[in-house]
Figure 1 (spheres, rainbow, N blue to C red):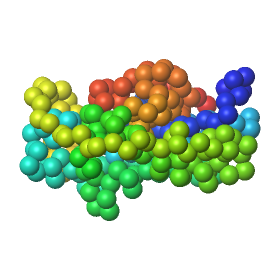
Figure 2: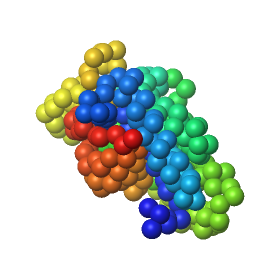
Figure 3: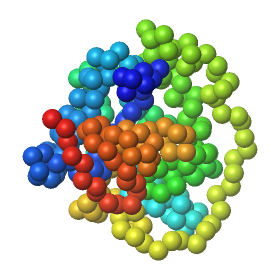
Length: 253
């Protein structure tokens, strides 16, 4: 990273990975604490190297395949929504780590959720392509709001003018809403396809994803999905959170 000297590093974190300390897999609060520690270590390294960093807060995790749910509930889309506390119940890793180094945090969750509920459809657009990854169509509508929050985050950096100089290049082109059409549901495969209700506990699935997929923005591993680059804990990851698997991530000291 120091050799590449990027103009700006945008990163995030996802709790859907199990960390290892001294050869022992961590769970629960210990795993969460290690995630915070790992991201904090990387943020401090970037700060010492003089590389501007902006983090993105985790986005909702719906724990149900949203395209299937919407297709089956076109006349009752509330069935596919989740309470905001439930959808974001495991979020906070990014903010906890960023506060230690005063790293800016961009939080777009007010554009994904109302005060009490997180819907599956907004403005007649399907928001999720699975249980938490945003569709490219909806992600593009977030561009102006991302830009709005990036502006103060980049104050003081030379990168600000370069990043925010061309508003038209960032803002989405107005388009007519595309109708949501039914489709055949896919077979259930674990937590993402079971259709469990939000009061079902003990599913073993983590929320707190930070994905803005379809825009090239970072997923929970701190890089674009499937890139295999390091996550906040400093270990290589090449796993899709939506599969429900929990790859082992070795934490660095």
